[in-house]
Image (tube, rainbow over all chains, first blue to last red):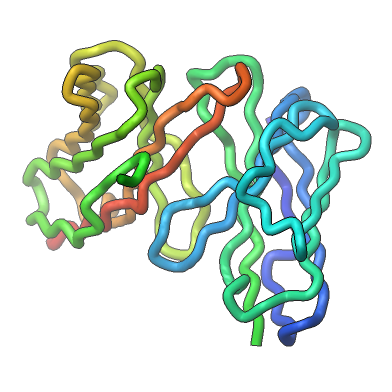
Length: 114
Length: 113
């Protein structure tokens, strides 16, 4: 089966600019997650979708971050305006009904804000 | 108290030795536990999961779970230099009925030839 697809792979922007990341989960996976991983730290959940509905966005900085999954398949995460501390790897993951499989992660997008 | 705690390391072991990685968690309601391996610059990949108290073995890897002590460990036998990576412990906390993994900060393992 194809994995979780993410793009772009790398992105460098200046502070106060905007950026968007795209994710296409594994086919049939109803649950999609966006994680932020700052260097040297574990992944931190930003938002969790079940189909096209938001299950958890408690740690999403909603003043600058937004995410959508309109058709219950692919998803977009946006940051506007970006801050220096947003420099991190943004990981998309998906999971199906078999919880023993945990999550499958995409390759991530490395964002550098200068 | 952090939800999932790991020693950041690095944990250094010689090739062929047993590496022991530890993780504690705070939510007593947690039901499933995962170990992910993350190579530098790469995304996490699942290597082990465990639900029940006791040991679960898969090749050179053994996961150990003690729910009473809220403790999960990962043993890597016959460690190889290719095992050098960061190992992330993740704990499943049910989130409105859906799976929600909370990750520790990871333990960096260095296996020297």
